[in-house]
Length: 251
Ligand code: ADP
Ligand code: MG
Image (cartoon, rainbow, N blue to C red; front, side):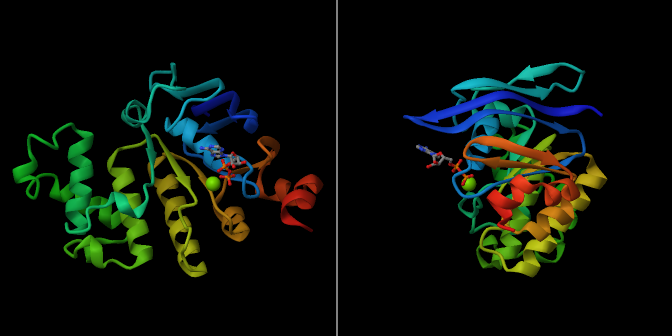
């Protein structure tokens, strides 16, 4: 199986605190990988280094270049990393709330093609079909012409997902995508992501507090504790791991 992402001996220290310590992991093409662990374990710090929000203190991050090569992306900056195919689900504030749901996705499509400023005045006509196709993928087609501002919280999360997919990512990073959602909505959103992974072959690295959801949708699970990876495996392996049960699941 081809690797989409390879992380080797990643470290990040903030002052004296080693937030991420010697983490190595791989995400295969078409794999949905969960990174779990208690609060403060270093999950977001890992996401932020892979996404380029800040550089690692040490270590390598390699992204599949598409032609079998591995492109080093550690410390090259979030915009460049996005252009190379790493997408993120953004916070709600990233949407243009006065625009329609469809127009928000069109903006993301235009931005991807470096067309956003040149074509701004006619943005409403461009790539409309492509935007609608993405909205259908996330189950928002019926809301396409509504203002993003009036969407329910769970639908905004779907819009964020469509906007991230508009960037045509090879790898999608989702740091607590279901935060603030009700249990049923959480399950539905992550099941949707699971279907997208299966149909499109993109890779997803995500974190999620609801263990039922994690076990339901993940191909593999990585467990972080105090900056270190303490276990890796399938849901069944993680459930049976005594160290994980003691430290994290509390059983
Ligand atoms: P998680 O996402 O697993 O809850 P984080 O990656 O947010 O954990 O945090 C890991 C550790 O790094 C924590 O001890 C946290 O306080 C610290 N940390 C995270 N970001 C910063 C920062 N920007 N500056 C200083 N310390 C930070
Ligand atoms: Mg976090």
